[in-house]
Image 1 (cartoon, rainbow, N blue to C red):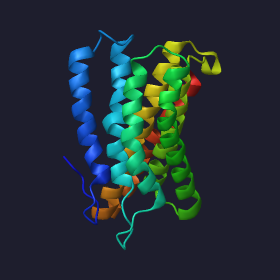
Image 2: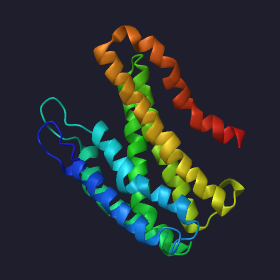
Image 3: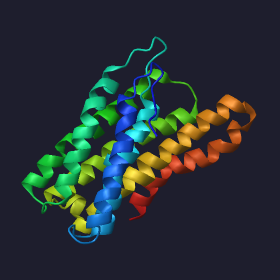
Length: 218
């Protein structure tokens, strides 16, 4: 499914579909055969190829005048490059070249984190669902840092490589994807039934603070 933007531009909406197709093809032929720790790494690759582009498609919409922001324009052309480079990186042993190929994805994470931070500072207010969207963008930047560390073979915080990889997976899915789903669900609830917002606020908060609590526990 292609998700068009309000002005009919589907540049950000096309890549999630293409990425999912690529992921299904590669996973069918190579899962568990070519890539060490194949199941975990293929689960991770679903994020840059489809989950994250789809999520950003839902967040980065044109303004009321139909104009795209700078972040949307940059991410629109960077996401396919970064996602494809992540795939190639996963077929390489940990080290310099594998890390270099993940740098574009790290840039995606940095831009997303800055976007989430700017939303926090500029928006204000008490919309809990928007805080969840902000948290999702910030969690993505954290996940990208851990992925870069794994591909470089760097024991971030002293963790062994498998734990570094699992942490990257954690912040891409339990962090970015789960918090974004919670935030967008909250938007829908507020739009259609404002009286139900207090009921959904508690689970939204739990989803928002779940990833760092798990990290602290570990």
